[in-house]
Image (spheres, rainbow, N blue to C red):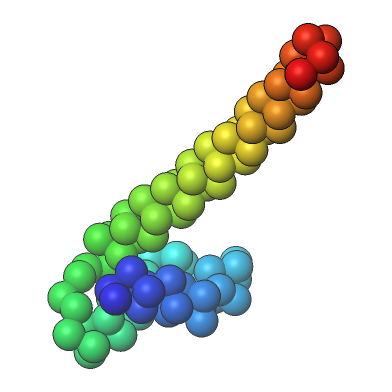
Length: 88
């Protein structure tokens, strides 16, 4: 639940993260404040670290899922070649 709230608030403040005028630390402080209002007591740095960790894990899962599909396709192709060569 707390991760979903963190993702939601980060998305809501996406424009502020892109702003050259507003410092990211200030945006994370606002996110931490809003999370505190919902009962989750995390500081700005903890929110930043958690979001980076979630983002890293998401990218890692995407990459390895993709690699898994590539290997599956390669295996399927290899099996087709083996079956065609052996006449099975």
